[in-house]
Image (cartoon, rainbow, N blue to C red; front, side):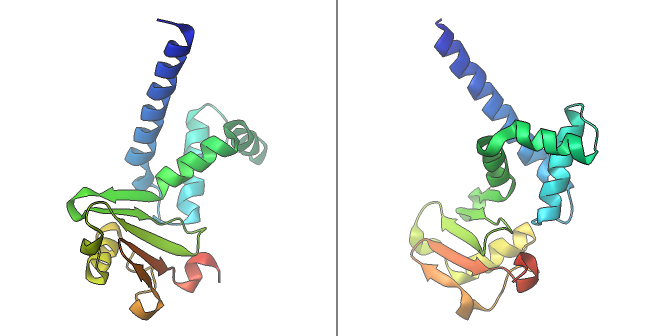
Length: 152
């Protein structure tokens, strides 16, 4: 086995472990689907990496992660795949909309199914439920956050 092959395997193991960590711990940081929950998660990771919780160490931790890894972690933190409903959901409160995408048949993603998904993942209270404000396209529904979620 060559060194590049070993490095590739190590990278895949890291990616797997990091994805599982995010998936298994993200719901423990409340309130879910908020920037506060994301910040609490990052602080928890920093503390578990042996850093103290003071501002200087947390800033050092954030710099050490780098933009690419932080972006991947954040994406994983705020997305869900609901196989049973054939929907992929991205709900980052830093974005203006919650996105629901059909995994299989685009015609199966209806506004009624979107409401079901929002309820299942605990977003009904945070999303604007006025369907006239939704952008509905084949296989994709974009739902605005309630204004207090995004600060607008």
